[in-house]
Amino acid sequence: MPIDRLWPEPAADLDDEALLAAYAFPADRTWLRMNFISTLDGAATRQGRSGFLGDDADRRVFGLLRRPAHAVLIAAGTARAQGYRATLVGPRSSAWRVALGLPPQPVLVLVSRSLDLDPTAPMLSDAPVRPIVYTVESAPQERRAALANVADVVTAGSVDVDPVRLRDDLAARGLTRIHAEGGPRLFGSFLAADGVDELCLTLAPALEGGDAPRIAHGARGVPTDMTLTSVLRAGSELLLRYVRSPA
Image (cartoon, rainbow, N blue to C red; front, side, top):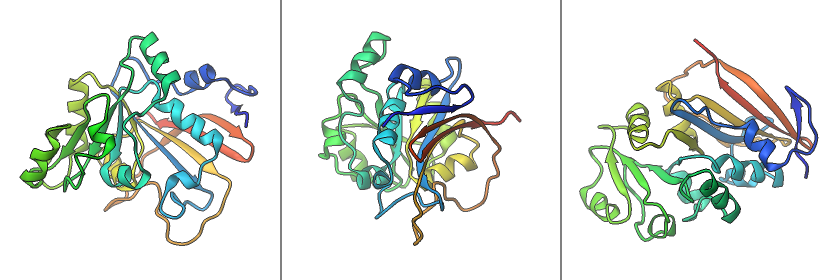
């Protein structure tokens, strides 16, 4: 299905390069983007998975958003539920990255307080780039030792992973283009820490009802003004890009 730009400059049937330009990372700073899909009534999942809400256009943009990223950030529980794989981008995207001087694959970055991760899972054991797992001081030592064989395990908080420490550590590693894919609690924690620069939101043309979660969840509300920068459309689906409004 073609993807058209409705605003700010209307254009029909955007190719991949036009889409990449529309979602380009700033070049001069650390930037954290959240990417989510939601139904019209605010549901972030269907049958427990966000992937069941998207169509071909959403999946196309989803893949392109990963292409220029240095790191793909995801909560460990969401990575397990969504069935994450060892490679994060396909051959065409890898070739594109190499041509621009980037490594063939972005780094998989997981957040887990409990370290309830299987070190033999393909997303860890078969990863072409050594993953990074951020955890807390109280995480079990035996799990920490097992995961250290396949990933860098970094303590970034006492009770909860501190988003500011996580961002700073990634930036110190040269990973300044951070593309985050959930889940809602991770989004909520970064909102609370004033750590979200951008939201890419696909608005699926459906109503869900039920008790599906919202795209962000936390212990307290954190009002954050955002500015709309582009509106794309594929059929009845809207793909919206917002950046944080200047203070």
